Length: 264
Image (tube, rainbow, N blue to C red; front, side, top):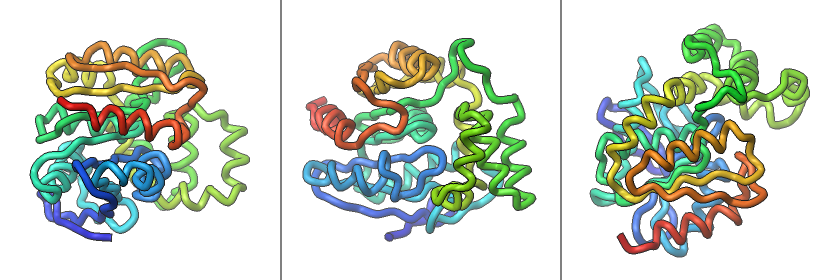
């Protein structure tokens, strides 16, 4: 892993693979640079066409952290990666990482194109929203060392996973990996706390934007994705048939390649 310093001095760890036009991958909750949908596995599929950067968001993996958390600091991390790549890049984000990618575009970083897979924007009444103090609740649990309870709260109140399913997850081999990233879940809750504001500000994004959902994803997810695509001036909406939030990278990668390789 290579490392660079962000604007506030925090070290950000990243990995570069491939050759071609630069492309930065931004993962969502419970994701570090190895996450299939926004890390090294999909980077390997895109590497024949692009110079792909997968990285550990601050507080994850080998990257540092500097409290207090602020969205602007994560945007600065992307700005530092873009500078490392020569001054401009395209950006793809998954889930809350898609929200962060969009925030970077809203801040007018030198981004050529942006692709967003299922940013979790609750825009209708088909499912309840997390409580207003959701991020603070998560941060408080994590600060007290209750990583398992932090992950459970995020999954139940944030993602909508039934408590009985989470109980089974806690006994599975995957659970330690979720706990390991639990103290960054408040970051993702902060990113997704105000979907109306995000959609309103997206109307100023002038670059080409691809907004993608899965045909098998729940209605609330697809409703938010469509609302965002409609708000983006150069937004393109696409559905991948049969896919869910845990999208198959063999299906997603060709859609991303076609979009990012398209002449502006």
